[in-house]
Image 1: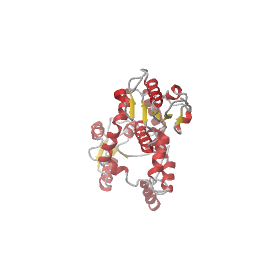
Image 2: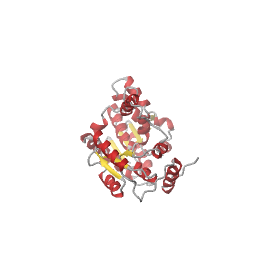
Image 3: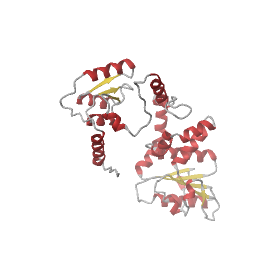
Image 4: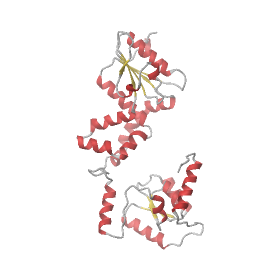
Length: 311
């Protein structure tokens, strides 16, 4: 077996599930090492079958592991650990040690690093960049998941550039958190509550059902909260936070009634809240002020979606 026309420093093996991608990637790595090239075979397939194909263990998630081949070139194997790669990215670009620690310990980041949609593909691109920048290998063979995720990987750089060119980055770069990792908006609300006894502020809480049931009107954006508000029969004031964003959801809620839209300004919010409080409840809305009813309805919706909660 020779490389011929595919004699390239990077080989990406793609295809459907069960067609032998991992076996081919391992074979290509072995042939490359026999040719005297230092080679890395890397996978970001969650099934991690590469460790069986090349006989490496879980240590390959932490570092490139040498595969004993007796060939002229060295052969290494690596399994992508998306979370570890994300952590290294933070450590590399954080301005100082304190900022790095604050990010890594923030519970938002901890959720994001493991659950963000597409995180595997983005981190695969980052890991590949690390490998190329280190210049340790003459050739890299990349084993991929089944076709759709492989295509997502190939398209990831373009999506990242598109994101950087959009205004969304400006929003993402705003200083949402203070030096202690707390949401700045929540800190400002606490300051208001300290001077106005009638204002009670909450941070992140598990008492959402209870608080919504105790409310006379709910100010929110168009989304899942609207469904919950309708279950307990509360009028809604919907924030049009980013004009044009989620407009279809917003228009749908307005069509259902018992809701109004407002700008994210104090005057607009206050005016709409007052009108909601003064308006009689529509006859079609059945008000139920109990948190228990809210919970029952919410659990039922989850069950319909195939998610069953255990008590």
